[in-house]
Length: 415
Image (tube, rainbow, N blue to C red):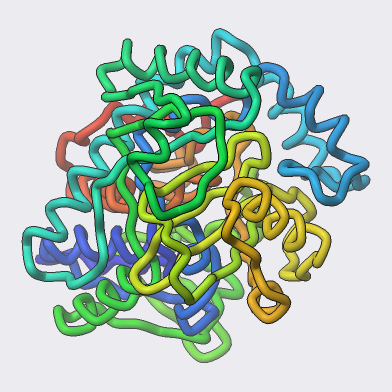
């Protein structure tokens, strides 16, 4: 008898969970309060990043955050507010930002990223999904020696972890991306990374899932849950009550709202990120992070995306023009031939990324409910880790040995 599984949340994590669960023979329903055409899964930089081995909660980030708190154009902005859940999260973030915890997380982050990259490549070779994917690596480009030296330390650590990394000088960067007009002193080149066009993947996945029996309930929000013993027996929406054998909570930054209804306290804060699309030829061919400005540049299918900022300011989709302008100015300061227009800036949009205190996602069953699997809190690596998370979720529910050790991702872990 196949299991009936309901997935709450139709972002990349939810869709990838649906993909692997239907492969296991489950009857899958995806519920999303939107129409699955917007949000963080659509506006991200499209990176698949084994290179990102250092978690967001790294030593020194608190000091930087305090300096940046009074600068609304800074790369990492935390809006101070007297909110109990935010204060709990901030305290846990501070406790997580230690050298020993970052070191412990490095192989964990590497392994889940490499699994995800392998699954992306399986998607492209299976002919089930038609989407843009390229394995061209990622340039961490710098204009100051200080930034370059700091990044090369990370690059050398990545080499120790078995990743392919090179340190390029100015001439080598220009030879690698000759038509971009980039002006830098050098770059750390992570050959291990790949990139894609998010909208293409999301649309292809929805089409595939629908054609393979997955049910979608869109523009429908789970408002309440019915508990029976140590199980969730029903989900309640405005339109219906839904029974399921297994529930997957993958609603990103909204996950804590629903988890509170069942007595779980998921320490997740929404981290807003912005993107600007330039739908004309920029000459940029290699994905690049502009190190000093923390802006990601991605040559997607038919356009170039400029994305950046991490704004911890609660759940809202307000566009701060100062932050949009900061991304545009960063692009101009690194690419001599590039000027982002007023119209392109006006079309900027944002997405909310769910950030845990220690930079690792929540993946696994909570001790409290035997039929609830949590898959959320991926921060800036949601796009990179979506396929791996979906695979792990399917293994948990199917009772198979997980592809990775799930202990570091456990939803009930202490910070």
